[in-house]
Amino acid sequence: MFGHRDDERRISRPAVTIAMWGVAVGLAVMIISVCVVLGFKREIRQKVIGFGGHIELINYQSLYNAEALPLAVDDSLLQRLRALPDVAHVQRFATKTGMLKTDNAFKGIVLRGVAEEYDTTFLSSHLIAGRLPRFTASMATNEILPSSLIARELGLHVGDRVFAYFFSDQVKARRFKVVGIYETHLREFDNSLVFTDLYAAQRLNGWESDQCAGAEVILDDFDKLDAVTDVAVQTFNHSTDHYDAAYSVHSIRELYPGIFSWLALIDTNVYVILILMIALSLFTMVSGLLIIILERTNFIAVMKSLGASNTQVRRIFLHFATILVIRGLLWGFLLGVGLSFLQQKLHLVHLDPETYYIDAVPIYFSWPLIILLTLATLVISVLVLVIPSYLVSRIHPARVMRFE
Picture (cartoon, helix red, strand yellow):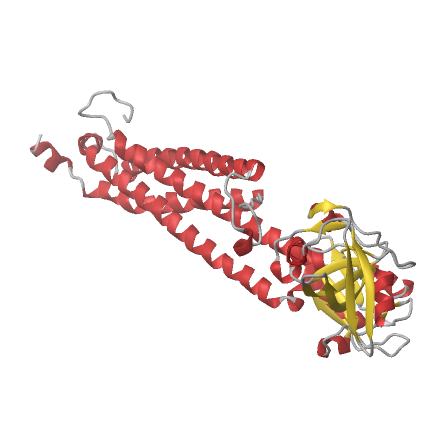
């Protein structure tokens, strides 16, 4: 029926082709959009978590002070934090605000000291020169890791020595050696954060060896953040350490609400794209099916005159339209996944890191979501095609034969 070679009986190939590729392009754009948005959110989220973990336990009074206040973080507390559900790692940190000064420039910084247990995976992946400092809680290494932004402003390079000044009751000066430079493109952090050993930050603050600004908790799964935070709040809030400092638990969302609110707004763009692309697919398929039905009026008339019901004839056209939808989805799936894979491996499309915080369009494949999106498009398309198929019931054999 649909494969006849007679020009008078053949279905309009342009209409069929446009309908099929309308579905293909729609699904490809949806897959690429989802992969890009998921990749972008995941990339930014991992960078923020790299600077602060999923959950932070800090001194409650630090929320109302410009400087971090100390909290006793001993082995007992670390063990209690590790006992929380879905915890992958726990690490200490201490901070001190100050200023780096060279002969020609100066820059306000936040010195962040970490110890031996610090997970260096994040910093190692964003290290662009030199090496990481020796992170320890037992000795001062006088080594620092500034960002590329700070290094450019001060004209620093690996191997340079620079004076740092810290202000409290009296001015404290330290001479550090730049052993490496990192770059994450997150200006909020790169503009001020300098890494060093925990011992140096503790001594600059005048704290005891068991006192830190807090502890960072890294989870196995970001999706469990809210649940684990609730458990941590119930466990630690309203209790104190042996210095009478009150515990306060905060998730990364609470510490950086602006960034996570911005990431949540991106989902709106995805919803708009999905709606538009599904509408495009449906429009092309409905138009194609209408053309197919109108071109086959003679066939419909003959089938009805031979005793076929409207339902039987409709099923024939719906079967053919479904085959077109499946073909379009197959090509769209291959096109969307293929282009996304090329971008993931080759970074063909670049971005301005000053604006987007990353230098290339990120891609992340969520296969359950991609398969669900493909199946949902198939189901919606087939259901919508039922409506134009009712045009078959408006075609009467007697009227068609009259004009033949």
